[in-house]
Length: 413
Length: 58
Image (cartoon, rainbow over all chains, first blue to last red; front, side, top):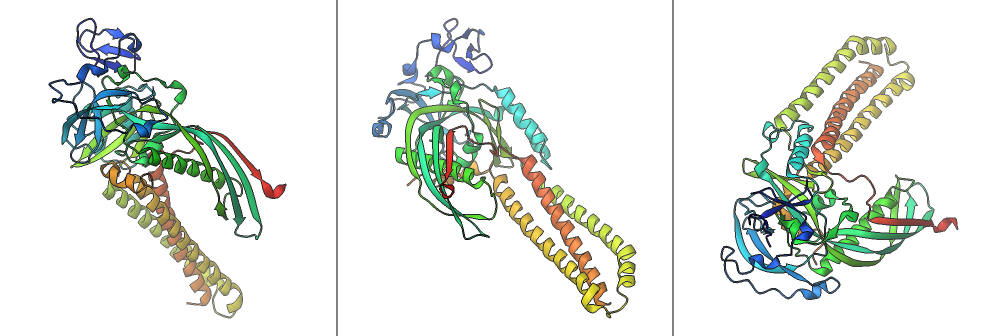
């Protein structure tokens, strides 16, 4: 699966900056489409490890696609089970998903040839720069995350299926304050609905990488893989369709939830009818930037087409708790000072005795009680927000448990 | 302490709790904005057409 320079014979790599294959030895720049496809280059290569492994018969999963195959070089991480296809020009020493160094050559395999590919537009340096800038803008980010090492960056093509089709629905909504039920007839048309088809990745992260501009997709050519990894698709067809329906349902429900009135309403029921068809098997570009924090890898994903960064920056807990406690002590001290200096004399003057117990004094206690009640409501809102943020903060670490999480997201049945 | 003064004390305690809750909420919102990257806010481009008909208005 490698392409060599016609000038000096050295392996060539795809350079997103030039949108061409570039020879690292003599600097030759060549349009990928002008070179013949060399799928058989590594087939039976001695360095690769002997005889090819028989191909699993999964053609039935691809009846609606091309069914063409191409040879590739598969490495497996013994830590997390992630599999990546590595080109002949770079050998991995670290798993791109979990950051573990226990990556071993597994086999040469024939894989289904993708229909389309969106080539990398963002270079390695740009990806690193974007992650660095976002980490710099973070609050209480630890110092070790302020300086990124270029060695921790990997460009990987992630396999996706695209789905086109129509979803119809009939939803009944009711406001909490009313008995009236509103019935909506919904008609949604999807084009290029992306379903990530690799079990080795957490769906939450890859969904956040979207959107991709599919108008920039080109016919698949192995030239675009040079210098990058590419992940193999391993999601069964039925599971893939299930995920497409799940995603479509989520988009429609989100859209309906945002319709006025946006609050105080409930969905009494819906009856979605899906007519989604798989249209293409496509590879999309993602940069993986891994930072090791005392054995815990943090992985940031960068959309290789738009440069969008996905992940979370771990905060310095001591600094954060210190800042919160400090702010609370300061505000409490300030309020106490105001109360003792002005509040106590004021209330003494206003309520010298309990004669007017059912007028001013009662009103005062009602206001005080309501304030305490309001503060507890604020605490509940704050705790909910903390829980939501906490879940998202583990995003960069959750890739270690990707298979576990994927199997529990309803994608595999 | 009269009942009116007790009400004043309750108001003070409530304001202290409110300020603490607001500080925690503000820090959490700030963390969410600056330390979590990639939240999708805009409508997905794959949703090509979306038509809703309110049948109860017919």
